[in-house]
Length: 146
Image 1 (tube, rainbow, N blue to C red):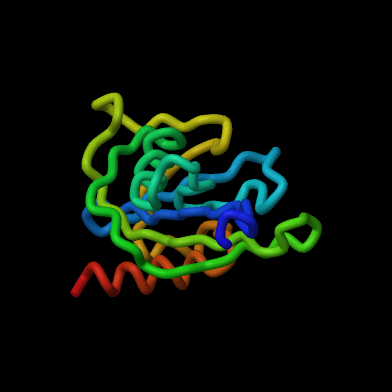
Image 2 (cartoon, rainbow, N blue to C red; image 1 turned 45 degrees about the vertical axis):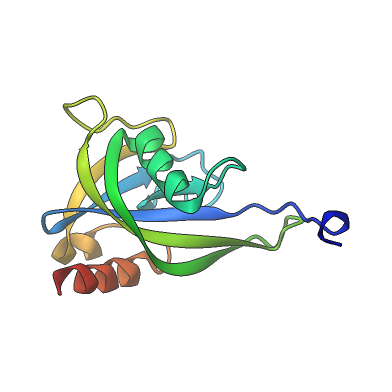
């Protein structure tokens, strides 16, 4: 029976937010255990009371003060965590589009990040990106440009 074998696992969402021909990236704080001071999109854990689209929308609002529209599933990924009980954290990456700033003026970052930038595809090599992010951004740009 399902009720007797129910497992609790951590699941993540990650998003790439596009505005015109740029993607929103945020620099991870130096206190982060994984990839400190690397650039990423936005994301984190899915809470038990939300679906995947609600989770990625919430994460953009909480972490960067961004309201996104039309999150679309892009691909799956996993975070390897060999030193924890859950050896792999599954995740879903979304393509999102900028709708507005939550406060009406500009992005607001939390202690999760130290800065953010709207970045064009030809600027990606200038940033220290988390693994496979450049490839994901390039692929997403191609999808939304067609």
